[in-house]
Image (cartoon, rainbow, N blue to C red; front, top):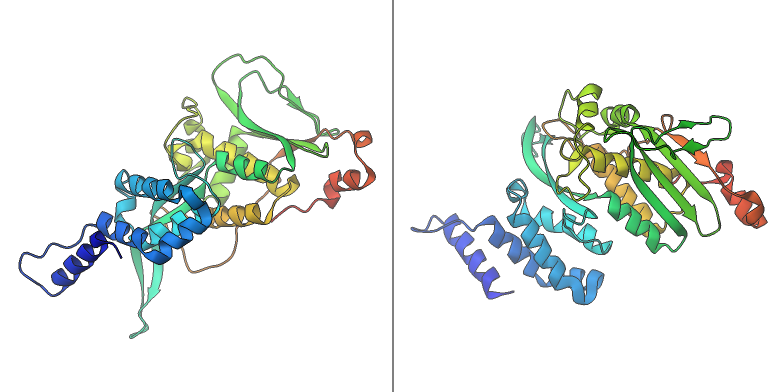
Length: 328
């Protein structure tokens, strides 16, 4: 254990005993003490090798610059950070791959002695994947030739052919108004797929499934957020802070979850992210539940542009949507 860790522990002990002049340890010092623990250091080294030191430094920086995260239990912050480390994704709002987000949650707590239940509200850290993290994990599988996702501006969307499933996004942009979001993927075996959702469809999906929305958020309020300028380098997170980023992440997750190839690593990452979505309750309520959230695909429009003649027999069978494992 480092000298800094010993000093923080001694200070905390002295304060607990009511010593005069004792100063309770700062949470940042507690966080550093946890990060300096041999067992934690070993886990970071196992996950990141020689890059573990820089990752730990980024966790400290993230904690220092987020007042909400500073209200969380430092031990929980480290545990959530380890999830990103195992996936080898940087925790940086600027990079948009993975985030540590603090949510003001309410949970029903049962007193072990009296058996009385009460609601307790506290800030809790949550690991979340950004849409760039989804793309990075997918490309690591070496099964994707291309993945592209972005906003669709007014004039670019030319329609959806229900019979063929074709999404036409080749129109000319006429304004900066965002009308929807798309994701396109192509596997190395030639299988291609595109999905498109309008702003209204995305907003309805969020209201229906995103428990992290402030209580009482309406579809119209989210649609108004879509009118804000697109900021690819935005450091904000969540539906209220970065609607466009969350919308892009939604179409990526829907498309890859239903038609994409998911490695074991990616399946776990998606499961963790979906669990975070189902438990995010800013000023809301969650009860103890291990149920995963079911994703509704009814609103999404998918285009199948697979050239069946270009695929071998086994790949053609895999390209049939009826034979594809949805992944959730």
